[in-house]
Image (cartoon, rainbow, N blue to C red; front, side, top):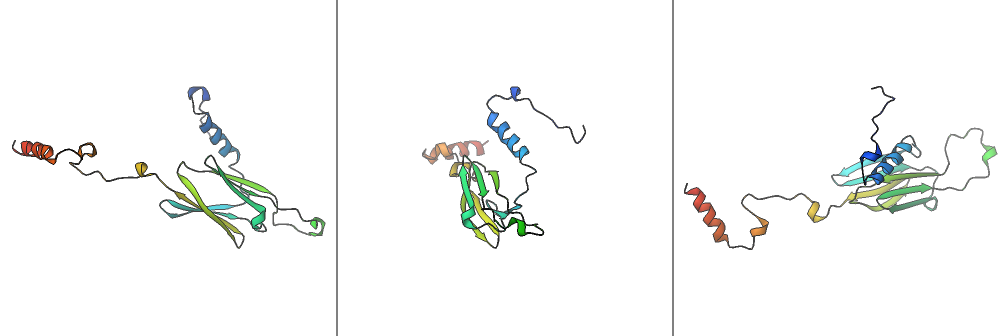
Amino acid sequence: MTNTQSIVYPRSGFIGFDHIFDQLENIHKHAKDTYPPHNVVKEEDMKFVLELAVAGFKEEHIDIEVKDHVLTIKGDRPQRREQDKYVHKGISARNWKKSFRLSEYTEVNGADLQDGILTVELEVVLPKEKQPRKILIGQNEENENDNNSTKQGLFNRSSNR
C-alpha cells in the first residue's frame, strides 16, 4: 500500500456509528488548518491547557463555546481601513474558527488572554463509578452487609483441607 492510499471502511458495515464517521471526516477536513497555531500542554494526568497564538486579537474579538463535547473558538477582528498603507503584511489578521472534540468527561474550567496567547484550561473529571478503584482480595461488595461469620466459616473450612 502506498502513502497516497488509505484504508476506507464502508459506512454500510457500521450501523449507528454515523456520528463517529462524521466527526472523523470533519477532523480530516480541518487537519491542515494550522491557523492560528496552537499547543496542547498536559499539566497533570487529567489537566490540560490549550494555548492559541492570537496576536492582535482582543478579548472582545474572541468567542469560546462548548456544545455537545465540541470546544469551538472563533476569532473575529474588524478589518483595518489602512490596508493600502502596508508595504509588507506578514502578520495575519484574518478571522478564524477552530474546533476541538472533547472526551465525554472533559470540562472547560476557564480561559485567559495574555501577551497574545489565549489559554483554555481543560480537565477530565471522571464520575466516581468510572474512576479506578482498589479491589481487596476476600472482600465482596454484595456481601458487605452479610455476617462475617459466613465468610469466616468458608475460610476455616478451606484451611482445614
